[in-house]
Length: 221
Image (tube, rainbow, N blue to C red; front, top):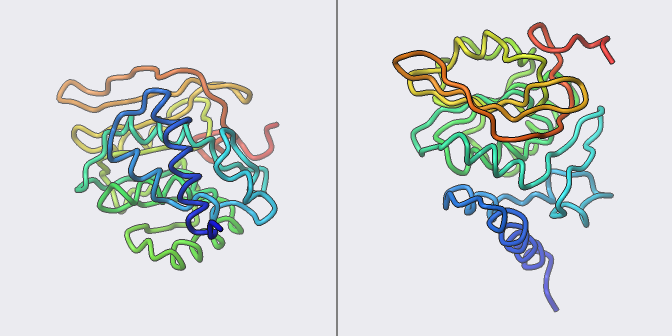
């Protein structure tokens, strides 16, 4: 009989093959990271059986853990190397940060919801993700003291790209961020070169709101 460890490893392999590789994700580092991170540990006990499904799941506080394909797409768009320092805005469940931490040198992640911040910090410690640094703060301000960053990923939808994040993007830095209204966004990639900031669109998406000084206001519905 298949034990739990083997069962979840098999589900991860199937997730990577059917949901991610089949949709055009080709970066071997991303595929390996998605196959390695135990996604079922980043959701509530009641949702463990759905952890490897092709959809987002609620994690409390009106937040979600993103669909696996979206996590892979955003990670691939960052074109990460093992020397990169990455800033994540919106820790949430911690799953995206864990995927990034499988590839990058260090991940700095900011969360504005205190209960999620505490929960994910404990989970990172439990899983020994020692290259993830957490902060409880307004993510739209970035993390100036630790910048500039090689890559920035924003896991909530913004009305516009926050200026502090652009300023914290290093030379040849890449940023992926959903930009749009409260109900739907475009996944935008920014890339800094010697001429300035270049911008392209990766496609439509739907994320929870990015709340903060340079995002949506908390009282806006």
